Image (cartoon, rainbow, N blue to C red; front, side):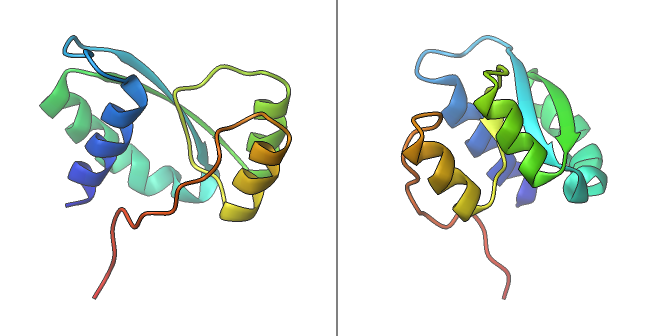
Length: 102
């Protein structure tokens, strides 16, 4: 299930017509390092996409985005995302649950 969610998130960041394998740059909170290092190889094997992971703390990810660092997908808190969007650094957040636990 989580690999599917990750696949949907990354595929949506690639845009239409991205049938070929892609290099995907993911800015991700260090707290998710363990799960991502487990999930990404499975995702890469299923899709052929290569994911470059860049781990950092949430505030540092926001600063990297503000500084213009390139990325395809960023995992941020809602508050940081809204602040970055208000500054024009990210698109406005659209809230839609991607996964949930019972």
